Each structure stands twice: as structure tokens, then as C-alpha cells.
Image (cartoon, rainbow over all chains, first blue to last red; front, side, top):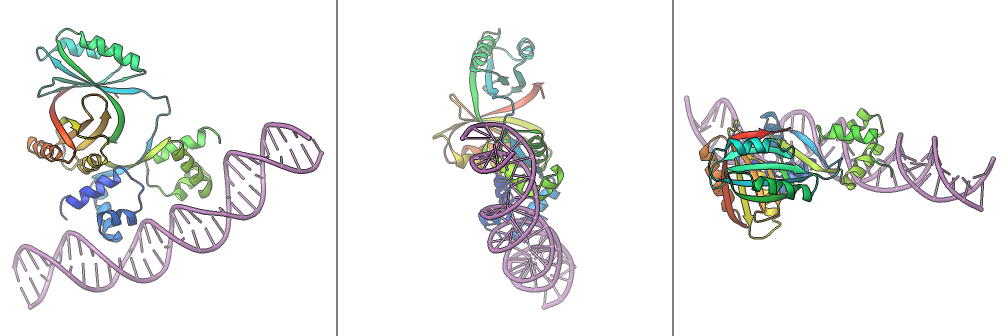
Length: 144
Length: 144
DNA sequence: TATGCATCCGGCATTATGCCGGTTGTGCCG
DNA sequence: CGGCACAACCGGCATAATGCCGGATGCATA
């Protein structure tokens, strides 16, 4: 039994977006026979690489706006900024990162207005050097 | 055409965990005939409540290192890039965003080497203009 | 060469699906 | 009241997909 190769990756790529595709069609896409494809898929399932299949359910409640705030700080680390960020209920996740950036903040708000207010408040926090906002237009891939 | 009712909610609940279940089995679970169930499901798909079906991809090795890849594309949108990204099991989440950036890709890998390889592969994808890597040093805030 | 093993393939019986006509229940209006 | 429209539901049949198997192929190794 070999590790995941190029073909497996192609399979994962397709199944991660078309989870209900018939094995026959999947086989056609990757250029293998149906039975072999089925075999590979069930191996991926047994190895736990494919954990299952999920229907992608759209918003039952009306559209929340998600965004990334990319922060550069004047000094790191900055407990103060983290404290303040934790105080915003819109803040979902904060990661300290290496590189040009210092913090990646994922937020979820009810409106563009709310996003602007939040953005302004964060930008004027002490110790925040630079702030880039990236509004999420679409979730292309999401794996639990 | 009625709004989503109790039965639809039961369907969503099952499909969100067993995306590849045969319509016949689904019908048995919710106590309706196969054809009616199929009818309801396809209505949910047409209304956009079910956006699609996704394989839930686990991790190859136990990934310890998380990182953000911030991509700028030459042209948007780019289905090709999404296809390739979906092929990497290290890729956890991809978001299309507005602003300077085009894609925010969250990855999880087992080693810095793996991250470098992934970074190189992604950077040399056709249509990728620019790639900034930000390694997560610490998860400061994480909410459900 | 012979053996073991992983991978691959095609075929056949079984199961699921797409499609359609027909039944039931309900609200509406002449 | 009786007829009508409509949505939800059901079952059946032809077609398509699946599960399961035996057997071919390639490859490393004793």
C-alpha cells in the first residue's frame, strides 16, 4: 500500500468539491477504471484521509460578513492589542504569525458598516502600525 | 412551494453528516418515499440551501504547523488555482477576498520542510502573481 | 525463474437513480 | 356544493451506478 500519490491528490481535489460525483465519472476524470477508482477512494476512506462526506449547507440565518484583518504591530508581542481584540465579539480567531505581518484576525460582522467601525477601532489601537482588510467574498474550500 | 419545514431540516441534518447517503436510505430515515425525498433534496439544492457536497479531508500526517498563504492572482477568478489548491491535503480553508489580496489559504503541515515545498508549489502555480507566507506562531483567540 | 504483492481491469448480479403518470389533500371561487 | 388548480406525495419502469469477484500486469526479491 503506497502513500497518497498524484492520483490520490486528484481524487481528493475532485471529491472535496463534488462529493456526490458517481465513481464512474470520477474514474473518467482521472483516467482510471471505475473499479480501481472505487478501490482508491475506499482506501482513502479507510486510512482516514477522507473522513466523510458533508452537504455544504448555505446560511439559514442571513448573511454574516466575514473578513480578515491583517495587522502589523509597532512592537511584538503586544498583550494589549490581544486584550482589546478579545473584547470585540466580532472577533472569531486571532493568530500570531511570523513574517511581515504580526497578527491575522478573523472577524464576522452583521454589516459593512459594522466592519468599518471595527476596522477603525482596531486601526487606532495603540501599537498597531498597519492594518489591511480583506473581506471574504466566498468560501472556496473548508475542511473541518 | 413551501419554505423549509421540519422534514427539510431533518434532511439537512442527515446530509450534512452523510453526504453520500443514497436517496433511498435517506427516504427511509425521514419516512417519505424515495421520489418525494429526491424531490425535496433537489429543491433544497435549487434554492441554494444545499450549496454542494464535499469530501471531508483529514490530514496525512498529524500537522502541527499552521500557516496563512496570502495570494495575489494575475487574473480573477481562477478555477485552476482552486482546483490545484483543493488537491493539497494540507489545505484547510480557502477564502476569496476583496482588496489587494485575492485568496487567503489556511494550511496545516507536519514540518517546515513540508511548508516550504507547499509554498513553492503554490507560488509556481499558473496565474499566481504573488505569495506571502505567514506561519502561525500562536493561536491567541479561537471561538467556536 | 518463481513467489509475493500492489495495482489495475472488465463482467455480472444487485441496487440506486431519473423520469413520468397517477393519487391525495387543500384552498379557492363560480 | 362541485369543479378547479396546485403542491405534495407515491410507485413503476428503463437506465445508470455500485459491490463483488476472478484474473491480468508490473515489479521487487529470494
